[in-house]
Length: 554
Image (tube, rainbow, N blue to C red; front, side, top):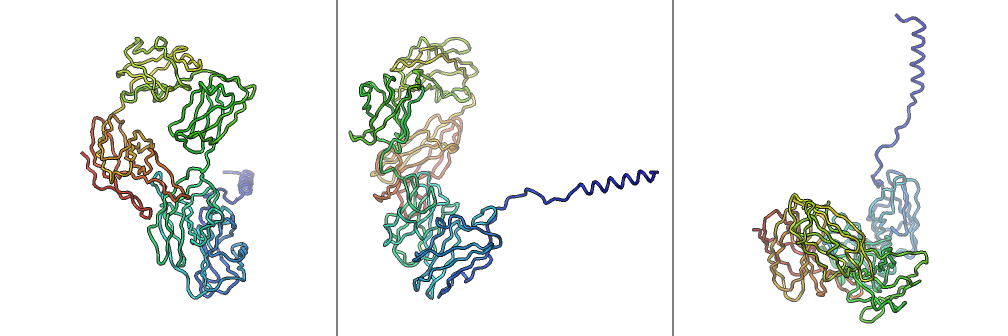
């Protein structure tokens, strides 16, 4: 048995451990993501014959106001802005004395009201009252859609402006507005009979003012004569082409290439070197496929500065100066890359090489292609006729063979003595690649418009092929990798071969896009045929372009 001394020691240890185990408040835990809950409105929301000078909104937790001048809007405008005061859980609104008679006022708080700790906002709460004996109750509902992707756009501001005040658009924030939900839907409530214009604005700074072409804008060409509830008002938003052409960036790359980035595509444009003007004669000029970038190579790099003009139809759009720091050094190297995926080539895409400058000559004696260590010569090597920076190497690649491509020094030479350094690339044939075929019978709704047909990879949204048609056409896509694909149709109403955004000043809607409502599963050695009927161009007030239900798969 334990003696008295042992029992005493045991008791002391227990008491010490209890004193050391201090009980503390738990830390961490899930973040509060719930917005404040409104408990009481005084006077009640939707009150008529309103004569009060103070409104009190009471919430279940401490609140704060975020950006009240930006978020809170009042329709119609009051002669002076109400005063907003936060008192712990209450928001007090002190109204001016000069409210108009027989008028419905809507105070929309946007995202201004939030809880004090985490900032969770109360979304688009409105307090409505009338100084007359009735509340204006008309509404407009609809949807906002991205014109280029045909997908709904969330958190876009939909602005409603009386025609009599339409001159404020782009200058002052609109008083009547709503935001779209995750499905792109919006609802404007408590409206009076009037003639309105409606806009959708995807903003950069949430001020409900159309500031620049960096913001996406949608509109309906005609005004809305509101006499009853209006539904199905749909707006397609797009980023307009900037009104003025500008060169956003320019630089001289280390490999001696001069790069320029534009704020918009430049169709049939040109670049002229004005200083040193002797460099303009032999320069090489390339534009990227989108037309919003240009690349220059010049014969001499000893200049201290270089000046350009960007022109279209002999009209100067912008002038550029690049100063060259004295310490800068540039190379004339040709860097060669390729399209190999995981060091594997496939029979369809073949092997493609890409150079950092246009290639003038190819020395085949300095290109060695080996198959299982044995040199082969029956391959084809060609330069792209439209872009001399691209080289194709074609060969009947075989399974279970090891390939080695050696590019010796000076295998490629550029126009200004650029040369490549020696590289060795090893690769094999991708035997896992499987290919199938698609065939489409395309029926167009009219012969007036032009249509752009693109086959889109459903996974990465890449367009693999682009065809422009003006009549009923059979399109055949052969040897496409296994995968899921969709057909995208652009209504090319101006026949320039590309999708174009809208223009608010000219009241031109963005060109419409329609996706065929079927995903095609390409399988190895399978051939599918499909009849596609392109629907007529629908009205801007309709929801989405009608879906095609007359497909046939064979």
